[in-house]
Image 1 (cartoon, helix red, strand yellow):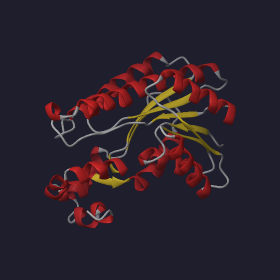
Image 2 (cartoon, rainbow, N blue to C red):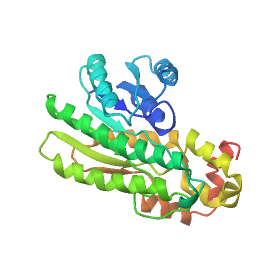
Image 3 (spheres, rainbow, N blue to C red):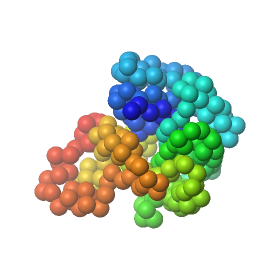
Length: 269
């Protein structure tokens, strides 16, 4: 059975990879981003690769509740209903200590990662609770959501740690609403944003090359697994994780894994 899927922040990165994976399986997808130009470009590319799927796009500023409500309303007009809403839009600036992080970068991370997800959750839960059959909401977490402290990720990780608690609270509050709520930990992924950050601190990449090749993955290697898990989810509170303790342990215990899994080399790093 095909689903109608809305993915915030899906013109690039993991959001775009998810859009391509869902559309490639025949599901209808709404692509969003801040710029109509980038949205139109992403829609054309995803639709071109998945001609059997319905792919539409709407420029949306997730830091504005009115814009997110408009996204929901347009999705209903275009698709008739929303079965799955993924709050994915996020920003990571991870090359400086907390005290040296630019004020504008802090504001962007907090408003996009936290407020965007909170506002998006409000809109999705209200809409799904009012439609026949309810629906499913997943919030995208990330580095630091597990409480582990990583260098230069203090501000970003704080937003993701907060979203872990927020999502758990939302699960409890919506348990009788007909809306299933879950979270996704996609692991450490090489995206356009990651490559931008790497270009700002090449010495860090060079000095951590082995560990990065163990921890990092390309988005296209991860998204089929994530989509399988989302489509197979039947209960609220599901927590989908790619880089589990078991998978991570196996990587560290496998001789030569970093050399064989040279994701940095694939990107010319």
